[in-house]
Amino acid sequence: MYSFLQRLGRSLMLPVAVLPAAALLLGIGYAIDPTGWGVNNQIAGFLIASGNAIFGNLALLFAIGVALGMAKSRDGAVALAAVVGFMVVTTLLKPESVSNLMHIKLDKVDAGFKTLGNNVLIGIIIGLVAAWAFNKFHQTELPAVLSFFSGRRLVPIVVSGISLFIALIFLFIWPTLNGALVAFGKWMIGLGAVGAGLFGFFNRLLIPTGLHHALNTVFWFDVAGINDIPKFNTKDAVKGVTGMYQAGFFPVMMFGIPGAALAMYHSAKTKRKKAVAGIFLAGAFTAILTGVTEPVEFLFMFTAPLLYLVHAVLTGISMFIAANFHWTAGFGFSAGLIDFVLSFRNPNANQPYMLLVLGLVYFILYYIIFRFVIKWLDIKTPGRESDAEIDKMQVSQHVNTQQTETEGKYDQLAQLVIAGVGGKDNIETVTHCATRLRFELKDNQRVDEAQIKQAGAAGVMKVGRKNAQVIIGTHVQQVADAVDRYLK
Image (cartoon, rainbow, N blue to C red; front, side):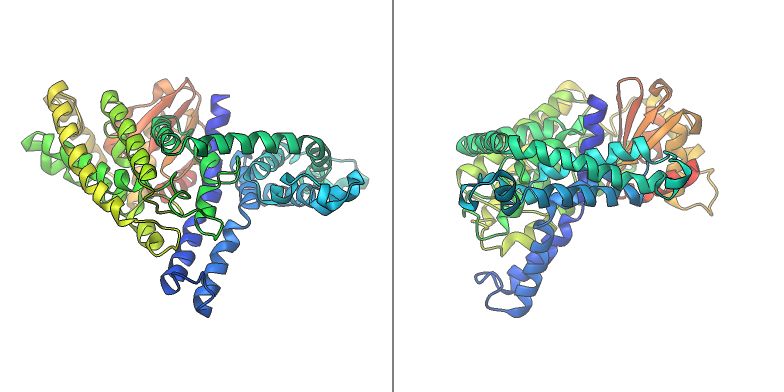
């Protein structure tokens, strides 16, 4: 189950990866026409409508993304099957179709069917069905007379048939299920700032497992009716309320994490500061610009669990403060400077400049807490290793420099990571999300964490006996491509 949830969380990142495009279009549109929602300017209207086209089809994007992420190979057949399944279910469950099928008047159809067409939960379910069908039937051979429909061509056909039964089941259970999800969403919204704080705390706490993506989906998209990210970009938003599950991340990611990085740099041994400066600088810059914090978080996540718990608590507090004072800003990918600038002119942004003020406080707070705890507990953050550990690193670095000069940096890193996880023969599958390579191994006891970190990875996490995650950073796609090349 844990492995399944991890793979699902990874799959959810594929549709989320398209949101920056929507955020860019909307941000520019709102900058041109910050009060008229595109009515006062044709260019602004064009850009805003383009961005909303992505948000308006999130459920379909999730169906495709989950199907591709959960299938054994990223084959176009599984994506086509997801589209077919999604179209069958959502068409059969349109209010007009429900009215006809149930022989009731249109105005008597449950309100839940009006929003089912863009409910992310439906997209996830269809994506899982499409992936299962592909894994099960993509190599199936039919009798000669039907051989044209064998293999991959069979998958969309199977999914369309299964989708009929899914639509039939949802015809009866959706009003109850939708009511329960909406009730949960209203309950969380009813908690107000406390609910936002709890979300922020558990969001950070789940980062080591990779399951935070599944949690984010409930709050950020239309699973339980909260739909915080898409709603923030529409007139349906409540100013000062919509966006409360996003705003509090900005002070942490743009200021808190860089403060922690600076504290760890200043805590390093004098002779090691030059060697580790690049690690902290790159991690801090990535957090500020893009809101991706894992390259820094994995530098202390396992060496200092207490510090990471403090980090999770501080994130929850930031979310609580921002929600309590109704300071809101939104993002398309993560709470970095790019998204902050793009959302600043959004009509639904409420006193977003106060998030910068809170951020300055958080920079100081993180710096002081991290400096104190690192010194107090003598935590071996990068640059504070023992002389024996440093000698081992220097040997590893010397070996790394023996790579041929004709190889690119991603090729070198890929080869070292492959060797670090036990070599090609130990790898069963490898996938990636926004910042991590996710390996399914024959035996993760063969993983050499020190070698992988010295290769340039930000961190390594082993899960169970067969899974390992290597935290690369925002350039994970290039490294993953290189790994694929060498494995083939």
